[in-house]
Image (cartoon, rainbow, N blue to C red; front, side, top):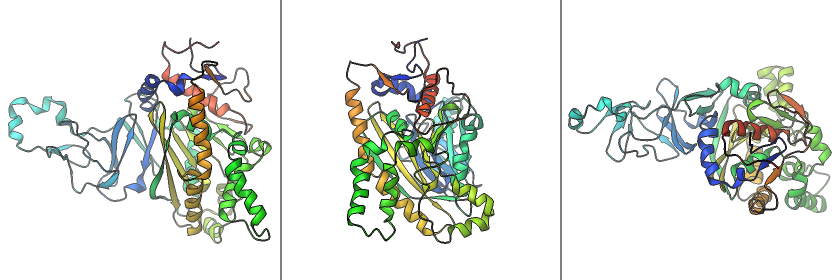
Length: 433
């Protein structure tokens, strides 16, 4: 069978072809469990949060009984988006701004102006009488709300399996076992295909090269001008690990899970050596006991990629949602979380990390963005149709079991592309040489 992914290479059309991009919206995004938002965004009855997923405008709304309902954000009358803002509160009901059709907070049709004028049309036989329709499947996992838009597909627990341990660890870093979204996300538009950004999250062989001019320069300046008898500033502490050696990243390890998920940082990570925060350890011991608290804090995973487009950094409490716009444009949302009940210095470090590393004004992020843009230009070359992901490839390797490998392996990328291909399978893929 013709393939886009042949086990060691992926075809360049994955990154350039707009028709393929449009097929992905249904075959990959609609069929997968995708992160929509955190429930702390909508704490009160009637609160809502909107987002677009697989080209579908969606809204999650907090109900009176505390449940969360996720609806297609479309009036059944003329198709107008009912909730236009990113966040807000609907009050007791939702009202379409075009013709004032109103809906209960769960999407049920409540009223229509001059409804008697529909008497002869038998409105109950029209799709409009169903109101704002709920999505096919919703799961709130420890505050993280995921949806599957397709009526058919893998169940939540089967889809994620052991990979949910990253979210467990992130939540349990709070002495109260609770997270809260802080502020609005940083938005960074990239002129590249979304899969390049995902690919980068488990690529441990680029930091010491691509980030030498940013993180490397910050470290050099500190060594030349700073007081070396004093602790390094927080910014330098956050930058420094990006210049670690190949040996360091290899020793970190990579874990892959079935269905395209995986993470860097199994036995070590760039988040391991941060300066301790006074009082935090004592709060964790009080909540979990010494052994469990140590197990929680010693698990310092670097980047966890959840197929298809979510990246989580539990030890620094950040989350990035990679939102495809077109085959050649992507928006990355960078969210930060507060560990409730923890010292405020942890949140301060999270804020600084997000600004230094993920912001559109970041020195580090721009290194990656430049590489993405150069790749998008270079892939138009006719010299080679394939992109290589064969580092530490093992003949006959499969992706249906959890595995731990060297931190410089590209197994996580191959695992991702294998799952992508399984969902995209058709009869029009290019043939490998």
